[in-house]
Amino acid sequence: MRASVIVVAGGRSARLGGEVPKQLRLVGGRSLLDRSISPFDAIEAIHEIIVVLPPELMSPPPECLNRFRTTVRIVSGGDRRQDSVALGVDAVAASSDIVLIHDAARPFCTPELAQRILDAAGESGAAIAALAAQDTVKEGDLKSGVAVVARTLPRERMFLAQTPQGFTRPVLQEAIDVGRAGGLGTDEAALAEQAGYPVRLVQGDPRNIKITTEADLALAEEMTARSEPVVQIRVGLGYDLHRLVDGRPLILAGVTIPSDRRLLGHSDADVVCHAVTDAILGAANAGDIGEHFPDDDVRWRNASSIDLLGRATALIQDRGFGVNNVDVVVITDWPKIRDHAEAMRQCLAGALCVSPDVVAIKGKTSEGVGPVGRGEAIAVHAVALVRRDSRALC
Ligand code: MG
Image (cartoon, rainbow, N blue to C red):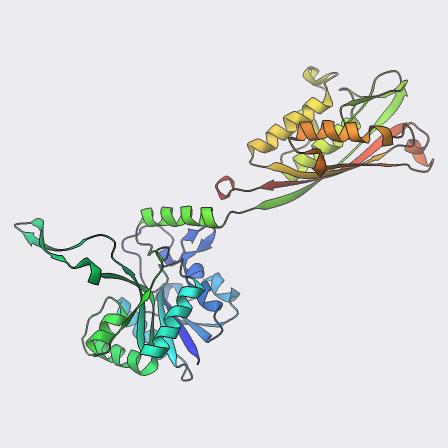
């Protein structure tokens, strides 16, 4: 069995204003058109996707149409929906046995639903996705300009039609012919009914909503935010070097190391905290340590750098980021940091608001080479991974 799908995107969104055509409005960062096509691209039997576009969107066609593995062909639409579908049907390959029709205004169809319609259409000739009415359904009437109930319809027999709708080739062709002969239908099933074919009702999907108004778009945005959380992961790099001089105290990663030498600097010169601070700020693209805590600002004279790291953590948290993990290399021939690494990890983890499990500290010597090797300085490299989990914060 070979199948084609016609995605109808020919409308001009009379009920949804705005500069961008409805089919190209974004939901969760992807256009309605892109989302409405995607489920069909995942189905083996579907060998072509025919997209019916309004003439003004034909050249250049929307970029998203290039990303599908299935062949995509575009067709210029007509005035009414049924005209657009008819033009799409004209373009279907001769080798297709079944044709599915789907609205670009329904971005949440699933491959499972599409497959159900495909199977049922193959068995029965015509099948549509539909939901049993949950509310009592009234037929309305206008009496002196006031809407009144004409009658109450039997709810157990009421279904709300969705797309996709599927047809074998001969059934669809007859339905299209009925339309071309003057028949009217707001969906293809209506024309197939008029052509005398039974149309099978297949369990639809309550999430397969149709986007008609701004409120629908807002709902669709909420649905994607819940089901498709966006995780942004970013890496940052930090480096620092401070000169060792006589005196006390020597502070590394917030831990005081027994020593009669100390690091020289405006703050407490904690070279580990400085490198890690730059790494997390860099990952969040939130500036650097010199910008936030300048060394010519009296507020930061003799400042505790582990406190500055805590402030930098709060700063990236304000931008929606949290630290995922940090890896630090401390290059020092003296002092050895092995005995202090655990305390340093604990201290950094506290400032970074993470578990010590995700903070690594490694000591390295420079084999007596250069200023670090001669015990004149300590240098530190740090990398940090930060993550942001919510679409709302993008
Ligand atoms: Mg520094």
